[in-house]
Image (cartoon, rainbow, N blue to C red):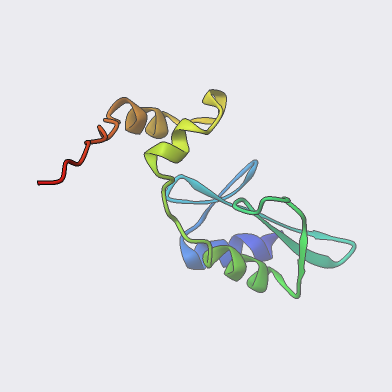
Length: 105
């Protein structure tokens, strides 16, 4: 798995036990089973292994993951036990928008 580490280093990604990260956000996982490379994007709904040709391709696919933060209203829909400390802080600062009644003049 030296190939994965080499490719991650090129992008400045961090490899932890549960996957590959960029700026404390999980991008996904990369692996090789029976000489076949695969990648799982953390943002994927189905979390399935997607075949690829090499570690270079797999890490490149992860590099294309857009690092966007969920909106505060999206965080409200997320299970509490899955929230990160940063997401909790964003929710603490959340101010709901008060709906205004429009009156015709």
